Image 1 (cartoon, rainbow, N blue to C red):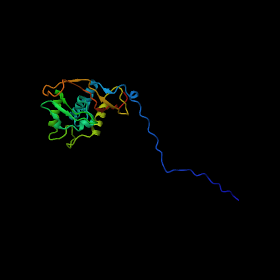
Image 2 (cartoon, rainbow, N blue to C red):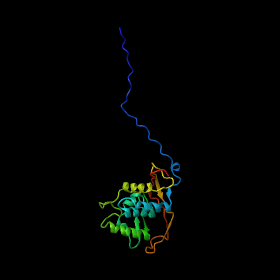
Image 3 (cartoon, helix red, strand yellow):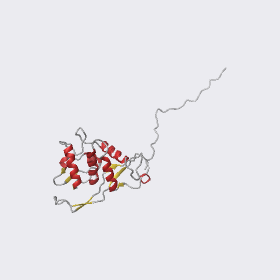
Image 4 (cartoon, rainbow, N blue to C red):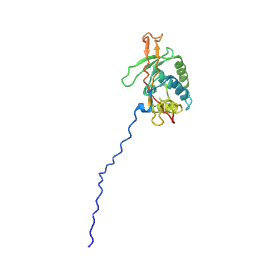
Length: 201
């Protein structure tokens, strides 16, 4: 008479446990500093103007973000009614509980913005797409990532595309046409942009 052998049954709870994602490395292990130097920003602005079909718009976008420390969300939300080209002023509405303020515009910015207004007439927002709508946060990040990928910036990661802060390290003189502005203004320049390295540096 043959014996019936009972095999042990594998237990299955019905739930799949997803493996934990890898730990994010410390910023100090990826790059030596958290800002771009003025020389690196100049290269980034020039490179942004050479990629894509909207070179002047992209170059002006990075320039304004750098000069006024704009976050990506603040840059894409900038409207022409906040810009006074005749007086050389721009009103910045800060996000994340920031303090709104009025900044003076430099000559380079005024000329670039005038040309931008001629290139994209009858638009509500300063930085728009071909369909006259505002640029998206994603489009700006991809633009700066592509521009950064063409540069050999120190400490740039080939995969992480870390966020860096634009720090101008400059002081603005008081604007003569607006006595309400203080004599000097610290430029915090805390607007975030992406620095991306497409290859090893």
